Each structure stands twice: as C-alpha cells, then as structure tokens.
Length: 185
Image 1 (cartoon, rainbow, N blue to C red):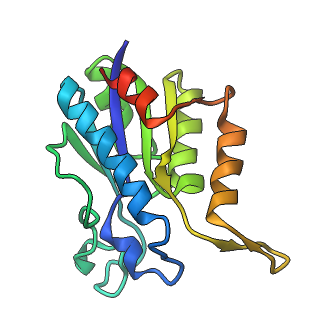
Image 2 (tube, rainbow, N blue to C red):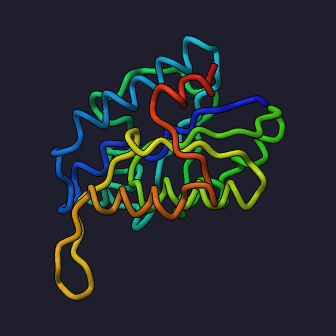
C-alpha cells in the first residue's frame, strides 16, 4: 500500500500565540525530524500542510501577511511532494489533499505535526472515515497545556494521552517513530 507522511501545521505561527510553550518542543522535533529522514531515505512522499486562517493582517500569526506561515525553526528541511494550505482543522477539508492522494495512489497516511488534539486528530479521524489506513505517531505530534471549562489545568501530556486513547484501533493505528518509519519504507 502506497504511503505518505503528512507534516501538519509545523509552522512558526505557533510561537506567536499566548499558549505556546517550548517545553515539549525539543523532544517533538527529534521525533518529527526522524520521520522526515525516514521518509526521505525511503523516497516516500512528504506532504506539508500550513494552517492559514483568520483576518488577513500582519498581526495575525496565521495569516500569510504575518510572515509566520513558514516551517518551524528546527524542523528538518525537506522537499515537499505537495504543499497545501488549510483553514479548517482537517487537512482534508477544502484543500485538494484528498484529490492529490487519490491521483498518486496513496491509501496510507502517517500523521504528524501540531496540535495533537486539533488538526492532527481531526485529520486522522477524517482520513479514517474516508477509508485511508491511518498511522498516528503521538511522539511526532505537539500540543500545549490548556485550561478546562471548570478552570482546572489540562497538561499537554494528558491531552496527548486522551488523543491516543480515542484514536487507538478505531480511527488509527498508534505507532512509535520506529514503527512509522517501517511503514514509510
């Protein structure tokens, strides 16, 4: 089955958000970059997705005018087989990604990127519903602490754990970087 690595929203925009924390960033980048290197070594296509949304003004970090919609510093350089811009959580909504994947005979996706519980999880669920085989690599996703509706903190680790729990064996196969690297080969 032909496979593709999706690198979702790994962009400088996040550094400009008040919730950004680089606490998990070094560990995440090691994992993300290992996946990129594995895909490059295998000749597996890598698709880059950028989130572009909100007012189209320079002070919106997710607007092209901001200059922040570019690869996150520390991300391994790669030549993308395709690059898509999205304005929704799923990389498959309104981007043409599904058409591109179909045209290239790709039926298996390895999901990585930022934010674990938002764009990565949503894309994984959507891809599963569309019939793709989905490998989700929790260690190659990044998220940030949040505050629950009742005011209690919710750690990034707990968010990642919850995402893995709800995706496992229903929407995706959970993979380590090493397991995903095998799928990319």
